[in-house]
Image (tube, rainbow, N blue to C red; front, side, top):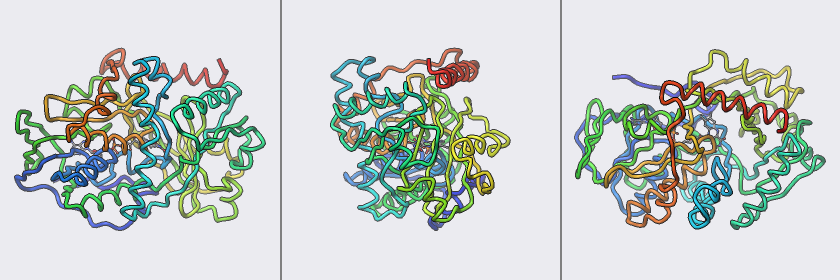
Length: 427
Ligand SMILES: Cc1cc2nc3c(=O)[nH]c(=O)nc-3n(C[C@H](O)[C@H](O)[C@H](O)COP(=O)(O)OP(=O)(O)OC[C@H]3O[C@@H](n4cnc5c(N)ncnc54)[C@H](O)[C@@H]3O)c2cc1C
């Protein structure tokens, strides 16, 4: 049987040691079968176990194999489209509920890290960096908007102040969010998986769900076993393929790339990011970066629509890094990798139920570290019969990409090119 290892990355190389878990080779029964051991699946499993459900998690490869073990590690609040867009799309009542949840994911992560003693280099503080005065204007409105929903740990920064926290000349100002921050993403996932097991949950690795037999008592089939469950949670996100055809039509896997330098040493690292905050710029195709626990610079950016793996990642991302930090021109790149996130047309998450017993959440479109943790809680609430918050997400409208499966990639690339131009020429 295929044995899929972690892709080579700084995170895989610095992961806390955990023995691989066995593949499913039996016929087992459970209350909830979770498909996918990324943050969505693990967060769902944890909330369900904490509420007395019996949970079995099926993972096609290894825990955190997907975006959850490869991402920039940035804890970013709210959704990939902000609450004002939600207000305009679905009206104030639903937006009120979604707005109240927009800052919960970061709190869930911190609570998990503390309760289960997860070693994942958690640091507080995230910066949104404005490259133009128009972007600075957006940050001012974003601060007002987030404060309206009760989020108060925000500071606007002018050009002088942002230079105190990021040694980069590209920014005209920014906003510091002290409830943002960063983590070693794979170690967070591994710690959450250990917490699942400590509560009696079972995780099978190298166990892809290959077929779902729907019905009153659904059955999930893997190559060598079956899980009979009362409920199924589909949490495969950009790696799900066509297991659930209804979900594939309204979303598109996209790749984004990350590089990691050699260790910079305390002194050089401190000159770049003196307070160890993480940073993302405000462009549509944004750059994001931060220091690792051992003081490397982890720098990500770029999007490949349709999720083809680029041949030379360093050639794409290193120039972006040097534009921000020319002083790193002689620094070696130790790791480069790509990972897939799932884009929806609205850039809002796709959440819902198929029949009575198959639940899903996917497609958070870029910013997903916090949302996926919230999603686990909201899915668990729905399975317990409290669906008000779940319904607020499930009622968000979603549409297929123009051009269908065949042409959605060039259409999306064209859209991104347009927004890239808008970023560059400030219109
Ligand atoms: C390179 C990169 C950088 C990013 N940076 C950030 C960031 O800094 N901040 C932020 O907020 N967001 C970031 N994101 C987005 C964020 O990582 C994702 O939104 C989030 O991790 C998605 O979690 P998930 O559990 O839904 O999906 P995933 O983590 O992708 O997990 C899905 C899992 O399901 C498994 N699976 C799929 N199909 C099956 C099947 N049939 N059977 C069994 N298992 C299956 C996969 O193997 C995978 O392990 C980034 C994403 C990428 C790719």
